[in-house]
Image (cartoon, rainbow, N blue to C red; front, side, top):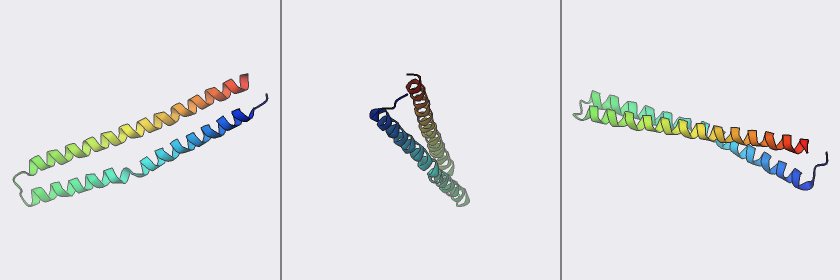
Length: 103
């Protein structure tokens, strides 16, 4: 089994792509505090609205809960998408490695 220079370059390029995908996923997961912070702020605003007896407190509560729920859903969707992309990349790399060693 003789590896050519192009095969080595491709393997190095694939490793770089894998590292980039892993780093992007890690950075995305580290940003979860932003969504949690928005949830805490929404909760504080809701409590203040009811404490100060604002007439539109129920409407504000529904809107803030709705916004927070949408943000959580979008965050999870993006997380799953990035995770699946990394998983797909690893599977393709495994397949190409097997084909490389079989030929």
